[in-house]
Image 1 (spheres, each protein chain N blue to C red):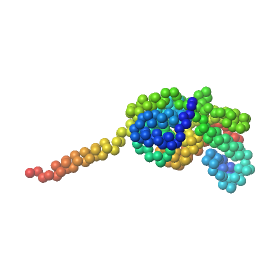
Image 2: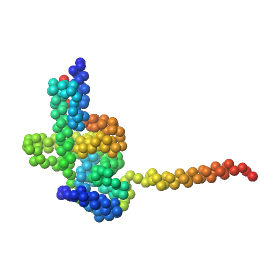
Image 3: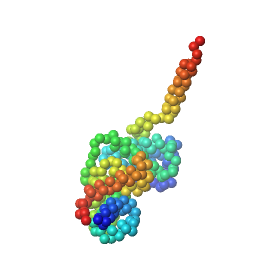
Length: 191
Length: 113
């Protein structure tokens, strides 16, 4: 994968042209954001084929909604919200819940990233386990973990995007954390 | 008894505090300093938080041809039918039904000659 490096100014110019109806400008936006949108979709639906459909749907929705995009948030943030909604719609349609096999883990961790080789190896192993554990969560719990813990959204943003209350988002996240904790570690002896 | 309650109380709150980087209150901190199982729990959630955050940096390659697929389908209908509640259609329907009812009402109220 060659990440497309596009400067923010260039993105703004492309968005403005796409809003005027330039499909060429929109194509460049799709090229620039396809990997991050696909990555988010894959984490939300844990199925490569479905994630590709979600990405396609998200970009088509973005194209239709572009005239209403006012630039209050960054284009990528806006696109992420559309991706979350598209994932929700398409996931609901899908009855099969594909569990992510360890070999198909979406994580491409780079062990050289950490300064401590032992810790880096531990992180890779934990990421592998975590990807599998995330795949075992239900879609509702996985969504809040992905958006809050991985992408750093606020509780308000998560709640708004998923159409639930902030309290419900917090409760869902708490349950998801307990679930992940249970999957990743042996239960500690109670005192 | 009090110690057990405090332990359960702190342990229940470990995930939300650690995962959101929220500091513990003094009493909870006091318990944590003395409770090895709770310290282990904090360590587990710190690691979970660290690994989850690191996952954001790992990019995933979109499948080849995604851009072409998108561009070829820009004009196709969306998966979810957003036109179900098209406001123009709704307002037009209300106006037509309202006008029909008003006409019908006037017709009924008119005295028979």
